[in-house]
Length: 320
Image (tube, rainbow, N blue to C red; front, side, top):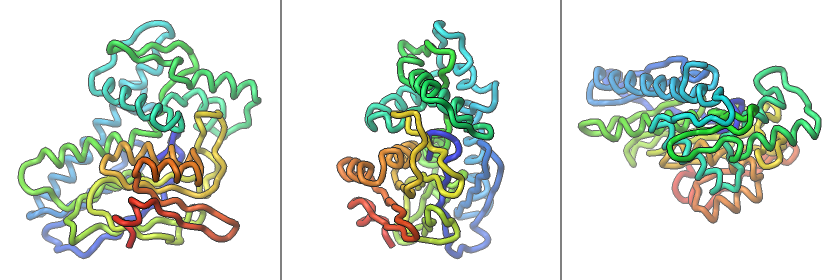
């Protein structure tokens, strides 16, 4: 996904035919977007129960991570008085610690503390063009030292610093849903959860979900189709909504060069990596993904044409 909430996802599942008595579809509005859960199980009642479970779990994670709801735990930390340690609930602490590790792993191409940059570019409003000095100050407030996590607490050292869950919230929610499905009794259902464009997939090897990947600038045009049986699919790009993905290393918007689609067993990793690789760019991102063994598809725009380049891991396991 994105380091900010406006990254555009361009993936669309194709649902295969299913007996009507075993399929349940549930839709809701959660995390500021639409979630659609399609579940096939031995009974329609069982399928409906799985769908409801998924919706409720996404709502629970939203109550933990929302930066729009002042009552969420993350919002409370984002408003904490600078210089004062704040206790962090264990679930959120584990997640924030993991996000720090991803920031280091990606060379800061992913950084959850980008709130100051979101503010200076007014990405939650009409948008603006800040001065270089304003960007520099916001960039300092987005560094790890501006929000320090240690000994089970978080301390803001800058009043401008805050964590934006737009770059990891969907992945965290889908991972929590996947954990519930894995822990359930009986055989897992055939399931697809579409959370604002990021997908969580579960299917038998001989009956995969087919996922269309759209042209990075013309969403009605399909440029690739993936066969997916497990894990999560996430795409990041700027598409027709403009340059809304920020590079936390420079504090500036990323050029609209195309899109990156990542398939990963861990939905959180898929969410984070799709954006981090887009921030890195088509060449550096693909080289990083190849070395790390990431299943990724890069679509690079060249005028009116789009060049699709797969990493080795993606080409052998998902290409249709």
